Length: 571
Image (tube, rainbow, N blue to C red; front, side, top):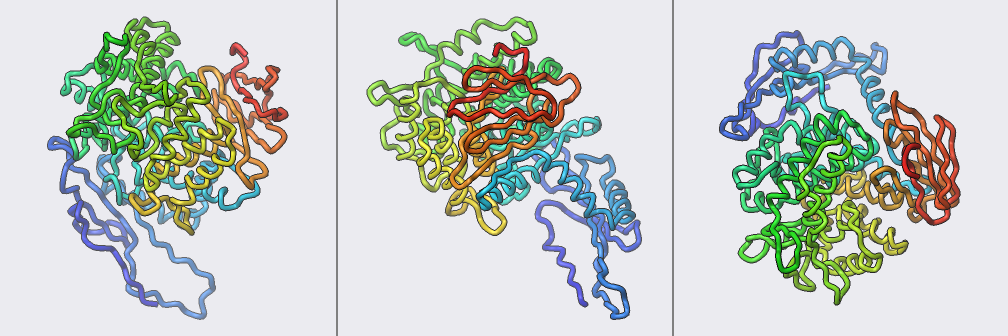
């Protein structure tokens, strides 16, 4: 049987050179990247030790079959090894000594990952879409290597195009914290922590950017890569798309509220949110005519709105509201640690201006927004979720109805899950189902359920869309909201689904199974770590039931929210 070793074309990024193999039956190559991220950034060395592919294999009918042939590649870089060549050789040798077990080890590792997730019964294609979406996100990130002191930048975040660099150059945007991080937070917190650590370890770049622009605190890059410096190829956009700094702040709040880890808050979390609050304090403008604070010259999530002469817009509602939420969390964190904080945080947070049109009873996207102006993607509708900005139900409905009519149907995939989620809040189940289906069916390619950025193309393997869709499942149909001292659930089953289970959801040191069908919701603590909070469930009638380990508690569904929180909480 003739074999052909399709090693691909020469790399345009790395100057690979063949080396003398040090292990029999292998080939060895190594090279450095051709272009550094910044002029002072060291070039990255990449080493590959792989099985030598023979020109042919002779199969003898006298042999015992089946017979398996193994071909192994080991890849190491200067980001995780002092000597990538020797590290690749060592990995290759280790793999060669354990060939029959490689597949079983791989399966075992994935079994551990799949302990947490979402199950649905009654609708196979939806179950496949959920599992595939998790798979593509999980395949693109790993836990932080906290023991690797020689490589402090080992933590790495997510890019919209996942590990495939067909789009967005592998850079990290707001997509990581706003779209992919939330599903990881409640189902895979070790991976969610990596998203936060990525920002924390590279905070120097955000501090430097703030100083260059004459602001205080941290001004995070719109596009970030290995160093944490700004790598956006369009500097004006990098300066204006600053909601990312607040998006990161909101992710810190969500982590604190699901873990209440005082050590983390003291050592990392508060340092970060304090610097973010200081940035917004230096960034806002006070308007004496209305006594409100605003933020000028920005681009919100709707990137079609760049303002006159591309100078940005004023008072984007999303940016202003999420900046205020960051300031409020900075206060919450300071109080949890018992430290003082500037009164200006409270003053600005209480008096942040969010545009509102009383005649139409809705939120214009920004000052000067013109009716019927086309919007690229979810922007103002994000006020309700994830910001949880307080508004009457009718205003929430008006926002959804209006922006539904002006949002680009060919915009990014994650938008429609947010419309579905909003209509679920309002018990408009038919419209919720319409946009939930649209949120993935128009953007997933069969048979592998691979995400595309838009129905017509864009970035392939677009895991931003996967993250938005998953939020539409657990926060939309599961109705889950992360509150200060509880998780709130208001579950509804998607069309055709007979039951749904959140398997091993992580909350305050507990792993909780939450199962619901048309009549009831069942809570069961599967495991509890040492020192974890004791939990209780409060049903829609206000009755509180304490949860014991591995003892299921069934709550009858009444159409009202159910809360899960620590026993010591106010409820």
